[in-house]
Length: 459
Image 1 (cartoon, rainbow, N blue to C red):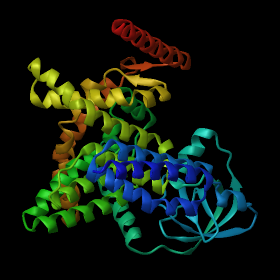
Image 2 (image 1 turned 180 degrees about the horizontal axis):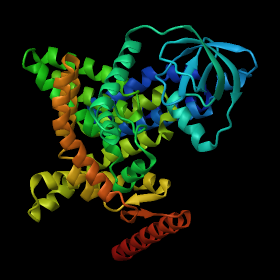
Image 3 (image 1 turned 180 degrees about the vertical axis):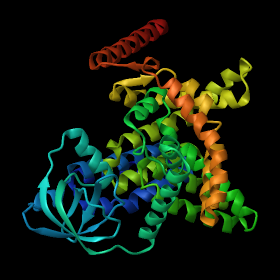
Image 4 (image 1 turned 45 degrees about the horizontal axis):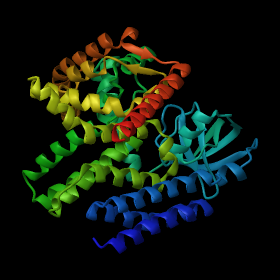
């Protein structure tokens, strides 16, 4: 690519950054989409470092634009004792859901059941005070941090449409799995397919964190890659390559909606679809550029995504696997590790290394994660397959579903046993804030020594 074109694109990226800082509005974020998408396409096609730098200018431009923008809903809305007519705009998670109308976008908490698309009168709204951490979490998930408790909900009109049917189907599947499996096994089955850990007990949640296996029930890139491969091979038996790719992408889009549109799932889905499209048009694919594309598009649509811990962990883990996993695997191959162990162990260590900054922020790092993941990850595809078969069988016959559930229980029980065994507190390293500060200073000190030593060697 011509040097002048590269410089021009780099300058354009810098200009977009400066313009983003000056024009921090919701409208501008959508206006940023087109030039940003063009830069991302150029980065993937030409694979030049200057264009990649331009992409990062655009990414951070979009981020800063979002961070500087004020929430109009939060600024203009004053809760009253009366009622506000709203539409439920998300699938309720626990007691929490997003609601909006033409002038308002808020998060509501209520004891009363609602469904996606319902038109409701929300009465006796009381604003909830949020700390900084919860505020950014809500911004990353709903693009608003205006949260209210609802005293009373009146259903005006039940929700309809394709997305509502998807969520109703998900609820019916969850109910079937709850019948076929015991509590923790059911929660794990739902987590493997739909993501989320809300059905687990607090004790088991701690086991997941201590054993470094929380990603198993987060529908990570690993789960998505399994689903994409299985779907594509299945559709390919009866369709052309174009038909198989089209149906696979369509199914993945529906699956992303089913899982609740979490950041880690969207990132993995975009990367998977980008890979399929690249193969379809006969172009070589680059995982690192696919990662940049996925993260870039997500941040453009919602700049606060960058504060989502699941997005941070997912993106950093994927980056670590892309950059370091192969190098680590070569080492294990030299010491004659079996292939399946070396692949799993290298991927786990690479992901763990890159996510250390985020894990430190949580105050705890799992020391046993490489071993627990080696024992669990090879089993996950089989567990997912049998959960799928159980679901399909249950749609035809309750007893056939029960038969498949019996086989599925073997895999689920094994995974639960490993998580509980390695989830004991003595396998996790707790880190205080003081230790974090000292660790950072120690790393900086060692880097300065190395730089000084290298300079002395050159002299």
